[in-house]
Length: 208
Image (tube, rainbow, N blue to C red; front, side, top):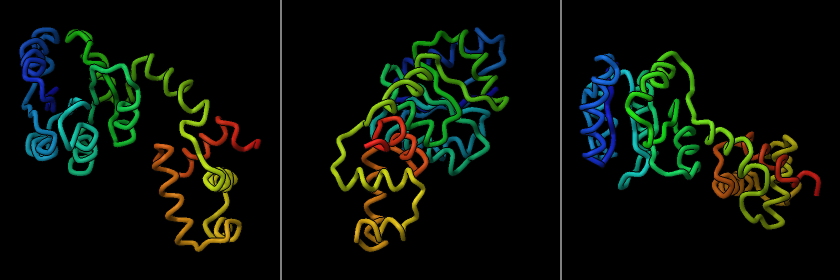
């Protein structure tokens, strides 16, 4: 298994280069690495590794954009996000950007082989703590304060109403509805209407 490591901590990268071949009996090697998130996609494209390990907390453009760029340029290469932070937010963003898994940087090298093999086999790998945070955390209550118009829009989206119907209800143009919807999705930190509807259902907005 050949890896490309995208991480701006040279000591961490060097540790993986030294320890992964030893702890996996030669089954895993670091083929290349970069500490520049902007160069990640080009490096992965030239090396064609099996997996790309991407640290999420890097200088701009950052690890999440690196994940998205790798997925665009080399969609067959599987991407694993890594972070030393306990905050689940960046990990969730990385999964939305196309990462197939997330591993904490506190993992010991000998613990990495099973999840990496699972990801190669098509599984999504997440630590139990992150999975619980995703299932039981922010989506159980409204993550941000919404004004009255935003709540009406969210209820309409959750009801499955289309842009034309929403425009009539709010007495605005279809273009305005599209603009308002895009702004609402950004505010809720979701990528589509289905996720927004799920937040509406969990937060109790539908019952207001």
